[in-house]
Image 1 (cartoon, one colour):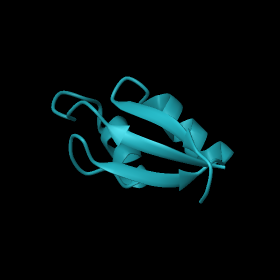
Image 2 (cartoon, one colour; image 1 turned 60 degrees about the horizontal axis):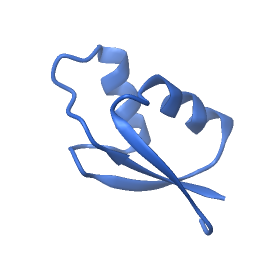
Image 3 (spheres, one colour; image 1 turned 90 degrees about the vertical axis):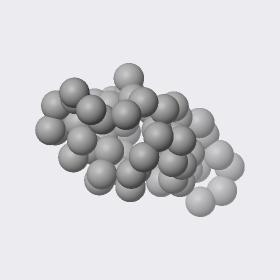
Length: 61
């Protein structure tokens, strides 16, 4: 199982830790989409920035 993560809001005015989480997920700009494996580490980063992203489950990796 993999997760499709799309950034929907910008990082201006957000905490540095949130910006770091987005960068660690591989997101660089609004409407940028990445595919990441469904691991506890990735889920934790998603939880921290859930107000800035949209997450969908995809079948493959």
